[in-house]
Length: 236
Image (cartoon, rainbow, N blue to C red; front, side, top):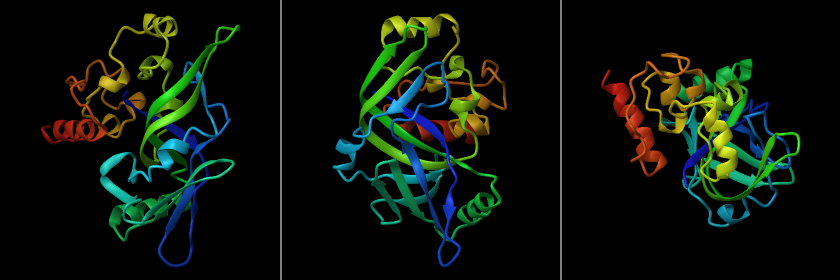
């Protein structure tokens, strides 16, 4: 099982009095995603098992582990489930990054959320019209929630996305047939967008073909993958 990320266009709420509180939804239930080559929806009970474990989740800016905004273990990030989806509330730290982010949110420059996860169970359907749908039934891990600048999965075509490992072989073959180059889950391009996980908008090369890369398949966890990307960036 490998980490995936999904992006959601949402209006953030930022408190006006006292320490800034950033709140919003990282995921919503029973709502079709943007077209990713396939569409996804999340079952209302998909988070039940992982939330029952009281997971130690971080709130990050742009999925960057250097920019921690909150953490459930520290009480600076709270997560809750309601009829709509997975809600979060971050007590922003008094740091330059957080202050700048709050300013950008209030201006409307940053309007989207994302969450990193590992899927435990899902259901794929090959529809009669040729489209593909995926229903996520259960999450194995909830890794982080993040306000993000770029919605990579909305902006990119299906060819530049990593295909979920759970995708049935007969469906996977149709996607891979149209794109023989490396998928973004294996990308270790050193441009800022790829380091942040937004490979679909790579500034070094729109196809990531000309960018320096190394295999990330040996990175067994999201932390190792993030550190590999940062080490490559520091070596430039």
